[in-house]
Image (cartoon, rainbow, N blue to C red; front, side, top):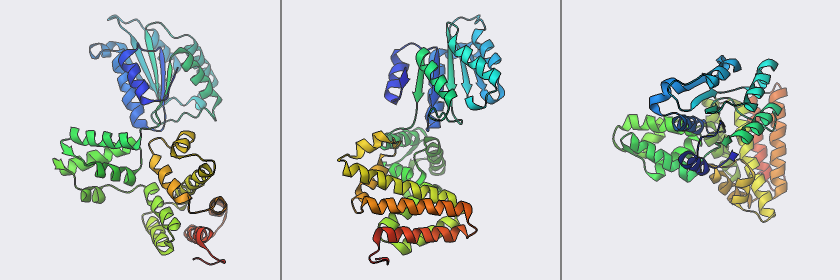
Length: 352
């Protein structure tokens, strides 16, 4: 089976027996780690973990060791559970790949094998090996895609984490922290724990978050794109200078800026087809980042699809120049910001 909703996974953990094999993967490594732990605890009680649970790092482990651990006899009884962390299927030698396929075809009774992809991504669209693994895992057990929670659920998670650490975080602070740091739950948890360590008790003031939590590149570039869209060219160029001063790589800045304009183009196209936020969110990877779609839907109405298409062409041209030209990358990005502004707002060839 395939599990793509966290609520379905929670239901499985609570009410259904363990599957012989699981594959946990997705963008939210925090959730991959969390549910690998919950599955281990479901399979093996704490008092039997020393005998019935083995955790391997795939980079340091061969399939023979994994098979030996699965097939070893438990003197204490109960399920034998083996977790293999960060398997890189595409880099396995042919002999190891063959052993893995054989193991998945013949899983011992009374065992649970957990593949936990915490740092090595799974991309079945590009990898035939991962497609084969997913097919077999879903036949024998369950694949679990953990790409994120909704923005509202992520804010609740932060508030609860804050409370566990003896502090209080207002809904507004949790929302601002997501805007500032992005939607990676591992990073958000670290930032919230940092704020709690600073505050120690009581409500965390907004000023503490602004002083202690570093804005991620995507959040800064979102501000840059917003200023371009909002006809604030001087503000956009000032924002770009700040990004350079912070040491951000021009290619990374351009990539994040490109993402903002792709959001606009997708939403403009959706509008023309009579589609809404939920349709775009479902069609693309916006789970937990629905606010991006809402903002783009709001802004896309101000421009034609031709204008937005022109912006994407300009960004593609800048990317080519960054990777092939000897021109100063900062100059190329400054030129790109001006050209984007003109593409959206110019009248008669001049910025309006």
